[in-house]
Length: 173
Ligand code: ATP
Ligand code: MG
Image (cartoon, rainbow, N blue to C red; front, side, top):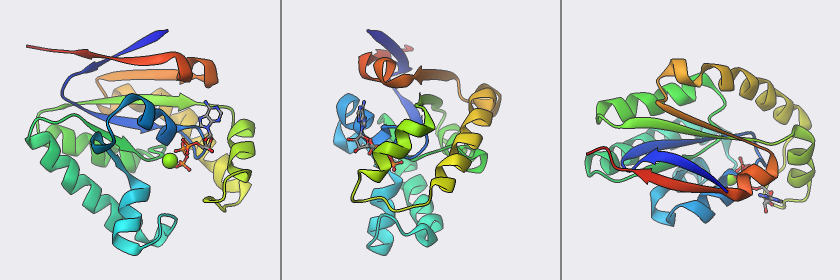
């Protein structure tokens, strides 16, 4: 069992390519109301969780709600791929605006495995190249997270580490 130490009040960014198991991990380790997912926000603003053209509106809405939660002192988990620096910068900014520590949990699962899972999913239809691009972004991401302002970075490599991980809340005061 791996305990992932997380400040009791933090903005937790899940980071991983599509199919790496972010939503599954979030369901298992956090309350449903703590998790803000980009899919849910795309659905809210555009009736379609896969509508990438709705991403800007979806993330604006997600950041707004995250800010309200953090202002009220509520742990907030962001379930989105977060493999692009500009996406993470938005989260770091929301966390800083509320004096909250941004934390990252990286789910690093081999692209082959994610692709096999994706093909078995009825709710995902995208080209393999999308995953390859996300994987390339993820490699850069892992190196730069601490520099970007994430105070704690947990990298879980492979299914076993992901499945055995539990969250341990740290109270800072
Ligand atoms: P997306 O970015 O597309 O939302 P995701 O990272 O949220 O993807 P999930 O939806 O959690 O990924 O998982 C993708 C698929 O892989 C699902 O069908 C899920 O049941 C399966 N899956 C998740 N975790 C595991 C696991 N540890 N072992 C086997 N299958 C898994
Ligand atoms: Mg998901």
